[in-house]
Every structure is written in C-alpha cells, then in structure tokens.
Length: 213
Image (tube, rainbow, N blue to C red):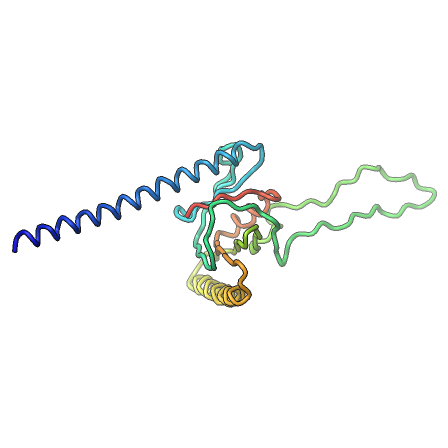
C-alpha cells in the first residue's frame, strides 16, 4: 500500500510543480511584453498612459517618467474577446464636455477708436472638465470614467446603484454585440471627482494606452 500512495504523492507534486512553472513562465512573458511596449511608447516624445488594473492606478507618462498618478477607487471589465496590452485612443465622448464659446469683439461706434486687436480668449480650468466620460479605442475597446462619491451612507448607496446600472447597461450592449458578432470590451473605471477632472484635462489626443491586468 505504501508504494502506490508514494507514487500518487510524487505524481501530484509534479503536477502542481508543472502548473506553478507554467504560471511563472506566463508571468515572465507578460512582464517582458509590457516592458517592450513601454520601451516603444517611451521612445517617442509624446505622453502615454499606463492603466494598471492590478494596483488600481493610472499613470500619465512621457519618456518613461511619471507625470501624474491617478488612484482608481473601483474597476470592472466586461466584454467579448481578448483584452490586449496596447491600444490607441480614437476619441473621447462626454455628455457635458466643455465647449469653447465663440468670441465676438464688442461693437464700435464710428467716432470711437477701434479696440486693441489682442483679446483674451475664454479659458477653462480643471474644474470645468467632465467627471463622467468614455474613451473610445481601436479594436473594440472602450473605457468609461465615472465619479466616485465620497461621504456618508447615502453616497455609498449611490455608488452601488451607479455600479449596478453600469453593469446592466453594458450587459445589454454586450448581448447586442454578440448578436452582431462585433468586438466589445469595456473597462469601467471609477475615480474621485478631482482625478476624473484632472485626467480629462491632461489626456492628449490619440494617446497610446498600455494595460496591465
């Protein structure tokens, strides 16, 4: 009886060891892949974004140097297909995106001298930026940024309701994409109001995104 049990013990040990080795190899490959992607992005003199879903952080970088770090309060991923590590931003959609007003010089009377040709344009601050918006990428990916409400019990309930409603809405879009056989992957990111404003403000057009998951 001892020999069969010993054989079973050795076989199970080898099986667990093989599984651990496979995980280690996959982890090393992923780390190397991410290093290659960041080296490629850092080679260009433009700002790029690293979204770390494991550490719940978002980094705005240039040449490998972190310009700004954003904390993620909560995140979730829903969709069909494989989530890649590298995406390019196509556009940003927001219901209440800031729009620059047309500036018209004041009317001048004939006898008055014309006003100075230099006129200050309307400017926006970080606080004027939206706190809820969606980033649209290539390859069927979108990332929604929404505000995390801080405060008492009622605001905690509001965060919970927003999360459930977001899942319900995106589940219906997922079903529709499945029927149409089109790619659909969405990452739901929740952050503080100030960080949501600041990220929208700092995000460059057509930015490259590296996703760590």
